[in-house]
Length: 175
Image 1: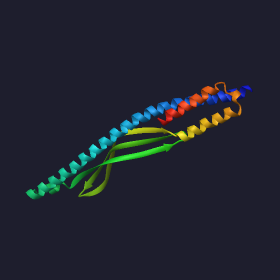
Image 2: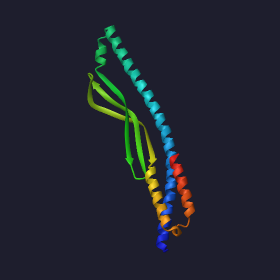
Image 3: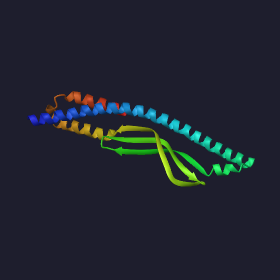
Image 4: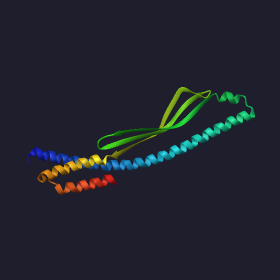
């Protein structure tokens, strides 16, 4: 066994340890992101209820103006603003993990005599990012390291430790 082989094997073990650390950190972030995502969805539902309530109150105001015969009611309602909740989803897939970004907010549109104009404005209220580890690809890398070890067990200084690390790593991913 030469020095180059020892360096390669040591590097692979170091990479495996770094992957374990990253997965544990990502797991924590994913849990926190899921909680934030659930809170944002609840807020979005509440915003939708408020939006529906606003539409109903606007309808009631228009009805009252019509019934009371207010002539200036029609003039006041020529310019209106439509407010709609929005959700933007974006995501990226990498070999070992994938990311997702969710943006929640509102889009304001100016209506002139009931027709949408070119004046729009989008306001993002909250943004959440999540990450997920690709267990299959990580497992492929770990199995490859195990196959290298099986070809020449003497090149791994910590052969039994590698198996324990691999098993614990896979348990952490599956939680």
